[in-house]
Length: 191
Image (cartoon, rainbow, N blue to C red; front, side, top):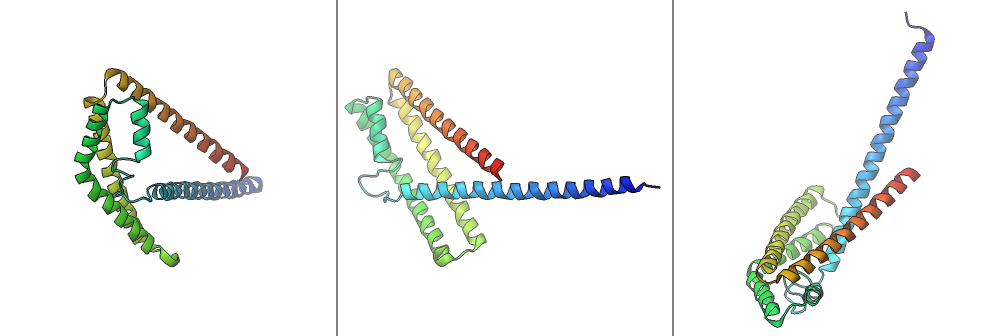
């Protein structure tokens, strides 16, 4: 025979456990929604940053013109090295330009699919998957060019400087990630 006190505490325990599970599920979905918003915001920023056409002379394939100029200046490339780098980018343009055109077409398709408040999750998911694959291909090509420049063009001193620049970039990313996790943690604790 179960005493009445045990039954009440068991019922209360089950209620508390259900309440806790409900709160955890709610927090999970809030965090998931926040991360999704962050990712979508990142894609929006990327699309805004890549708004210029890849075929304009100011924006060559493989990165923004200003970023390449900054790196060339920071690494103190000679005119001969700059010519080598330019030739490498030109050689890779034939494979990179169609990829950039596919990404632009995919972006256009996404804008059309979501025009006027439309939302077809299956279509959006398919377009997002295509864009992710295209972005992965572009990243691989970009890294291949960077490897080629690093190993075939840069001197030992320039490689050291390039490594320092990369370390600074990693440090900035770590700092942003830390700030993001702190703001996410403070937002979670306020709820």
